[in-house]
Image 1 (cartoon, rainbow, N blue to C red):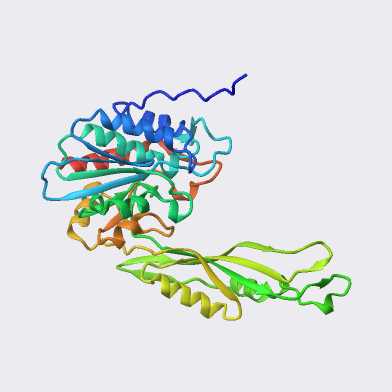
Image 2: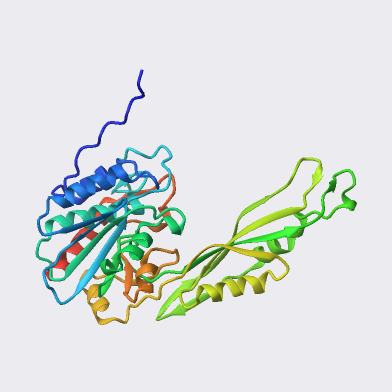
Length: 366
């Protein structure tokens, strides 16, 4: 018998309330690399709005108004999630009198995607021209990221005065973001039989000084444009070993450094080389941070309109891509970022509504 295929999800209804739309979007699995079904449905919903010009690149969809406004803003959100672990389909639960929507993607970041999709279709006459971006592969390595790919192929689509990423921020405005660097520290030794370990040099043991340094490390808090960015340095992986009776001749420790946006990638690499001078160091991934840009009067107007408090973003987000292009960018979306990627991921229902109200008010000048 032929293999059964998954049923096609129903069309998304942007006229539904933003909570119902969030649930519908979350219930469409879209783990990184498997965004096509959701991307097709988002494109279908946007295509019904005659005021939007559409462009698609892979599973990234861009919808733009072209009303000749003085200002243009970008509002972006990623379609993919980390792997599902029994937390789809979603469900509603009440805890302490607060109603939550539980499930993968509710916080990171399909609540923000739902708000953006609803407003993109409904707001035919925003006071600013808007470029809406719904993109793929945010949760995996940087070279697959849909925004990175699009910025290289169509940099003109990124021309704007301001950008908002709908990442979870507890309904506040998180300016900029820390940079992130992953490096491998390689220790070498000499193989021998474990019955005669003195005849070899154990490469795994040689990682001990690096681990001790990491355990004792006190990360800095760096103030950038009035916001305090807390850095972080963590061992995130160890590999080595040949066999149960062989002293290993190679071992590798992977370290992740989250650095303040006042530092460049070169600064971050130099700091790691200074901290671990005795090891062979290889950079495996690096993304620059983003300065907050909150001193821009236009951004200040957004803050005032949505009534949000400015805070730093500790994690790396795609605001850095806009910052690198000279576009001030912030994170603003429903959900507690500390719940992202967890098995009990959930978002307050009223937080989704509040985010929609805030963005709608600002985009309509209400």
